[in-house]
Length: 132
Length: 385
View 1 (cartoon, rainbow over the protein chains, first blue to last red):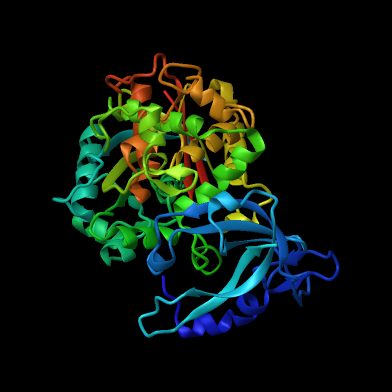
View 2: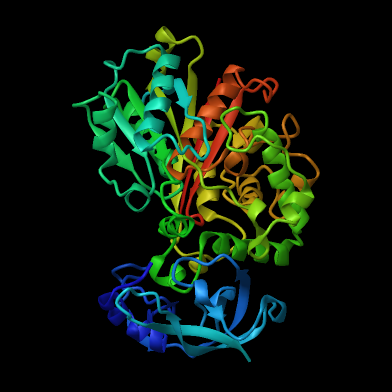
């Protein structure tokens, strides 16, 4: 589903710079950044931090049937990445096919175009990952 | 809390029902349930209906009002329940709670989805709403991809194989071939699955439940009253629901659904039963790997042993435990909002001894397991003859 310009603008800190939130008392890190700690709720005063973008592949798949808007870049490898700071996220792994990838492979973040299916021509950018 | 029983059930044929729309499907299922319960309609106090995505699929919201209107049930309260693919299970639970609490004496619960009025990519996008649009779907995840990530990790951690996952589909197609309401009426082989097109590796087309039109309904009453109007009331011994993170990547483990574990633990406690007491279960096999997770997380098999158990035939009809006698989501079809109610319909038929051609011998206790998204909602019911 194409996202409008307001959603895209709101998500720039997380999608462009991997901004997360952290509970300074417990050290828990949340990405995507939560505004309420799921473990301590209102007791936690969350602060912003920026993640390193380094991690490893926890699981992966090669998507052959495209969702609307990604037809031109299909097939692509999609993975759950476990970041060295702890959180996991879902992202594409670039410049590989699934034969090149295995669970445990080290990856780092790269800034890429994610979608260009917006009817008004809005381009969506964000994080993908590559093998290191 | 009062004891609650199911006194009537009905469902539409599941499949690509080009000739019938949203209203036709649920009215068909509703009429059958009323005839089965031998009620007139004036007895009904309230209506709860599970439907996931009529907005993106047919451009229609306000489904509760639509159904009361078109079923001729105005002005009783009518409420739509939405929890993605668990919408039907949630509707059943809301109906159960309404009768158990004493708020209503006769409730109809239904589930319906009309999925073939839009294109394939539009269905994929609509179902994507069951996941996290901003953090999973935006990155390129689809539902097959999300379950593929689960499958890959299960294969890594427990040596589960693609052949073992395929054996889920083979069993469920065999069961479906004995169910006249099922979308698929033909048996398949392991090779059918393994040679089918890869959707999101390691999952192939035949690992995935289909796009389906369909509806199912059930009529609920207090058990005491049910016994006066019905020869074979089926008691709802337990109704439990649990939640988990919307995104798969936020879970501590990819290879178990904690919502299934929590909901089933509560349900077994309510029913004062254990997994070994269950004769048959309708579990949420939206993908073959999902049935393997389900039979492990419900406690029928140890974690990591569900795939081999399926391959060894332990979940086939009249084996150790009969899993998905209807054909499951895989073989019977998966009109998402209808699935949770259809599971209860199949269990009622089995417990009454009416499951012609696929009857579980001496069926006394049945379980339904309905999952929303990748496991963010789970609803478990236990039914008894």
